[in-house]
Image (cartoon, rainbow, N blue to C red; front, side):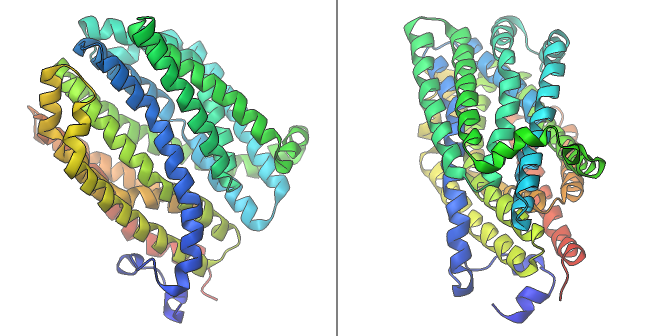
Length: 461
């Protein structure tokens, strides 16, 4: 690679480069070695929501389908704010791996599991308050509210398992064991889909059947992950690290909580954006709510697919940060953005071609099917608009630049809410437009901050 590319600060115009450049071919393979299984894992994860919406849609009941959408968004909103358990664990584990520090990898696992269990206990204690407040905030009414309460009341009990699974998955990804995570996710989703069919269509349990299927698959995933993590030598040190005073050293805990605090607030804002989206759809009636729910699941599918490059950025940029390898960090950032951009274009093209037909398969209600067709264009726009922020999230988290990432999220949230306020009374098209602007503003902010962050944290010598 030319000297100026490895020595000079990375500017936005420099970032997108041809992934086939000879100097980056080895790193391209490494990026794909993490990104591809991460994509497949994320797609398997997305099957939870897609299977639920498809199966409940076979009943032809818009309030029930809207309730599953509302309940799923509530659970996503509640637990997604704790996704720092996954992303923070990836960053700290990868940085320790970059330094070759196995003891710190084990300690990172121990601290994160302790944190997840503490959060799980608190959430269970607050269950009555949290559920009532959430349903009120989402303005659930009538049959939708009744079904949503049933769904949430069942799924809530698997919350602690979800939190611990975040840690175990994050630790495995930080160890570059993405294929292990893929195997577990695929297995859990096969079971989940089978239970959806059996409990909803076979036994006629309706909304409750969807919730029980999710709880069972989450618990089985926890067992499988715990066994697989326990087989890794570095993880075995975690048992000893519980009694090691260094694990609970103030500086180590301060670093973990500083990263997790920023990620928590950042994810809280992201979750708030999604809940505002769902609430605005609910205010337009059960048909819009159900249609937006289907389209949003397809958007989540595309985001999880593109997040494979976020995972690659988290791991590889985290390792480069741990070893203070500036040139490697820059090349990885370029390659992840270039490959992610190409994948975003491919996903958008597919949704333009088949998005309407795919969305129509998720309901037998003719009004819901017609409405999804009217707004399919937005799920084709979002992958192109959002891919840069998805990938740069991985770069920023891997480098522990969580405060900067939080700042860009705050600016984007202000823009998003401002558009919604100015557009009142809101149409559904305006709602989707505002959601697109949210991701575009985030990407612009991250690209502007990236050069100075690299110059600050990496020596040019």
